Image 1 (spheres, rainbow, N blue to C red):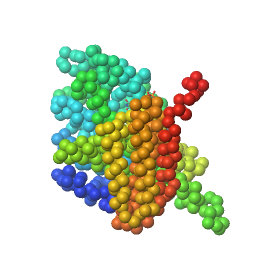
Image 2: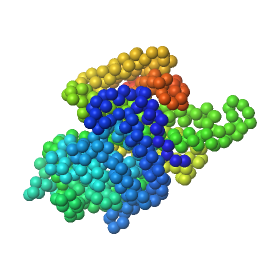
Image 3: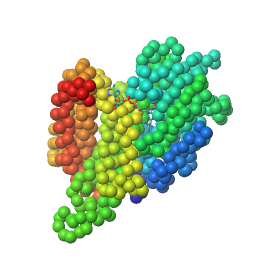
Length: 582
Ligand SMILES: Cc1cc2nc3c(=O)[nH]c(=O)nc-3n(C[C@H](O)[C@H](O)[C@H](O)COP(=O)(O)OP(=O)(O)OC[C@H]3O[C@@H](n4cnc5c(N)ncnc54)[C@H](O)[C@@H]3O)c2cc1C
């Protein structure tokens, strides 16, 4: 069963749900509009279905291997990346000054979803390269930008992010990699990083690591970390590759999924690197990359769920088992069984609301980067900041759950390798863990993001959602439960903020609060889509969207209430049991 790009839904979202006028104004020079976006998305969808997806199962089977210290990716991956770059996808949203096409991030996100759904292992190569270019653009000096950005945007060179060490994962303040100043202004980097995605590969070109390390005079903890650009090959000064730099791959990690992605242990032995940004302020600079990657990883979760849904829906229409519930002898296609429908609808209701929310957040990113007015840029940036942990954690939790539900639709065949469903479930699992675990995202939401501007950012966001819902006419059946859920979330937010000084309380509230928050956002998007559905060009969308919205508000949104009750119960039930009794 092949990958089917979600083009109908994309047409509906871009033509009927979202007003693209603000983006058209910001990207007038690039001639951006819905027609251009849809033409590019169709092209990307074709590449994903015809080139990336056929490599997915084979890549899982072949995996990566280490030959004389050199990671070798599965057959076809290097060539697929070459084509991806040649088609200009690496440059899509990059800065025109360095060879980028300067198109909206909103478009990028929709391409990312399809690439991730077609081949999650592959998606990390361009995803990490883009994150690295964003950090270099924001924090490196002009010389570094001039040498590295054009090559990375053209796809000749790729990027990697080197934070994690054996004893420093979530708590990067514990990291020990050292950076010693050299006479020429560069630094010698020494230490070992683990779990480095795309850390090395056989695509050719250069590999640019952004490495966190400590200068000799660094204070302890997160305030003593600096960021360095460390290439696999030193540039030769004419745009080519010079000497091999002093780092090597110690091992490839053996993993549950994403087998076609080389996840490396990297040993830096005095490798030459250049400081990016200010000494000791590296973590703040790295957050440019980490925030970009967090949103990207959320989109990965969405992409896998979309791919899994497409396969499961097609299978459920073909597979014959049991009597039709409405009567008759059968065997009936399993899509007729209500429980199979529950599974499919649960995945689809998440995927379509998630995609809409992803567009909303991405539009805020575009405004935060390109709007002429400082105030609008700042406001949008705060909203992105608030929603980043929600997108990362909720999209990957629902994404993994969606992949498992879609696998379940296949019954025993879902557990058998060649159908590809067990791979999707295995691959999706990492998205909940890397780029900051989902537990840590939830903590970020309750302990940092809710407190932005003394709670005014979250309150303003919820007030905006309420105003929009109140303005929708004639869809009470859908808007009334969503409005009630927003009101409940407002009260819950106040309750969480009131306990913000108590770390045990915020920690205990975090995961359930984030999930309730996400369900309310999905409800908001379902109300938007139901309201726009009558104007959809395609009859199938006009019929499906209101039915899905009703499913969501009756079968999924009520879960927010139960989560709210759990949040309100506080930390006591979690801290009662002494650690020794676990
Ligand atoms: C396949 C793969 C690819 C990866 N790619 C990269 C990469 O490219 N670059 C890179 O630098 N890293 C990468 N990582 C590392 C990844 O980001 C970390 O594994 C992850 O952030 C968690 O860190 P940890 O494994 O040390 O877990 P720990 O920090 O030990 O966490 C263990 C558990 O404790 C919880 N926990 C920890 N601290 C807290 C806290 N303060 N409050 C509440 N709960 C807490 C966590 O949520 C988790 O459930 C990758 C990892 C894998 C497996």
